[in-house]
Image (tube, helix red, strand yellow):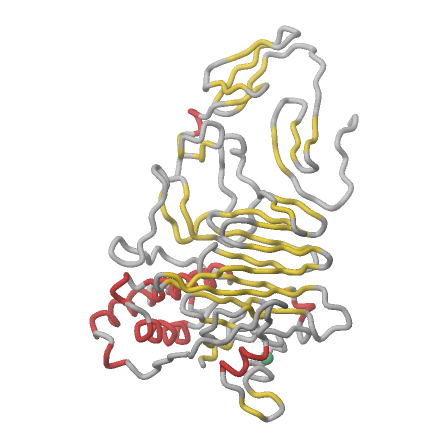
Length: 398
Ligand SMILES: [Ca+2]
């Protein structure tokens, strides 16, 4: 077991080769494909949330098969093929009572207003962030969130608990199954078997996160990288080592750091759709043709595929990344290329200019509309999406 102390105390994550980092910073390994409670509000009179997770191993790759989240009265079930809310399949973005689900880059993000956020890369890595108000109230693989490492996770009432024993405490079978742990084959002492050149190569890359070390301890993650090199099949492209470095990069970004582009063509490379480029620290609030005004983006940066500087994502004709000036517009369900125009029923001429309508002034009656609770179209035809739980002014004379 590896202990780290980081400032991101409300964050628990699990990734790669069965690695788990608790809210209090312990990193341990639990080789299990059974269902487990990751985090629940068990030590309070009322269990507001309960998050369960199950892994699977296919073709030597370990991924997360299913996540089940109870958030107040809402049940959210995530698999790589579907998102269910209270038994109904939904599409994102989804805005339900107290729960908002969206996709940012390739991450699925579930935000509950009660102070719980979950982020899944739809592959190996899942992260839970809890509001500080849940300190000392949690159970599960993510630990008790008491701010103290090891206690009362791996030392409880003076008794030492191994990682498998600890994991077994939080195993949660379905009513119809009895899941047995697979025998854990852990080889922690294989440093000599790792080629020195490989070690030097990855250490060099991990050390590239120079401005991350203040946010997240490098040493503890280097230890996990060593384990990955020992335990994983390195001929299949360092996959679990890549997953651990990716996790370190995410934690760095989550703590407000700026991870560098550590992936290379021959090392943990990622491919992007045509015209997009991979960035380790991109702006999660991307500009698109239909929404090109830089949103007030206070979120930390995120990795993924982004449009190169000077271009925006074409969400109108789906042609990839294009200069804003080439953006098309839509009106009445029809797409207009930049430069094309239409005339309104009262004689006003509207011309598409790089994704925006410019209309000649006429005293036309105008309408403003709201669809589906969050999708607005202004009097001037500008569509936008806004989510909020408060009461807002739709329109007034001012
Ligand atoms: Ca603890």
